[in-house]
Amino acid sequence: MLYQINILKFLFPIDDHLYRVHKAETLKNLWKIASLLVLFSAVVYAWMAILGIGSDIISGNATAFNPLEYEESKFWFVLGRIGFATLFALVILFVPSYIFYIITGIPYRKLLIMQEIVLLALLIERVVWIPLVVYLGLDWFVSPLSFGIIASYFTDLPWVVFFFGSISLFQLWIIWFQVRFLSYLSTIRKRWLWFSVIFLHIIYWAVVAALAFMDIHMISGWFE
Image: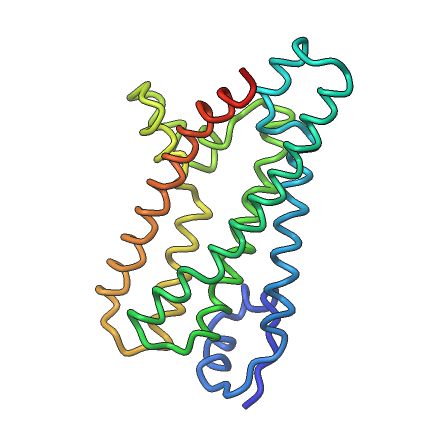
């Protein structure tokens, strides 16, 4: 059975597509969609960089640069964000797919379909957040779609706020979707799948929080 991948259609009649993926022997458009998602990721992060999102350190040191140096710093910042976006997309696509392949035995290429949808959801979350920071000045970790704003009422510890800021409504949907996908294509108990998926997400949230915490100090050091 041939299954032509269309991740936008996959989001709605989910059971029908899960059945088709389960029965599919050949997958069409898998690598094309993966490439387009990596490109979309680079475009989104480049757009954010051009808007100045995350460039507070550069802007704060603008008086220390002459006009040419300032434009060069902005160029390298945009380029760095594109590089980060590319690496981010590749990690989201291929690393969890391999981990879930080891856990479940589901064919790796079929797991890539799942992670393509996960990556699309993460990028949509980024796009939704852009007007929140541009017009309301809300950082990603205090977005109304995340739990960071609640955590900030209870603690001033940056890592804790970053950690809970990484947990959003989009992330909760992704957890549900991954468990749904994995349970349909494997015979592993759903309880074990819930544990495995949530545990991997906790690691992801911890890494995001650590990188956000380190990013402040690392970028500050580059521009001192």
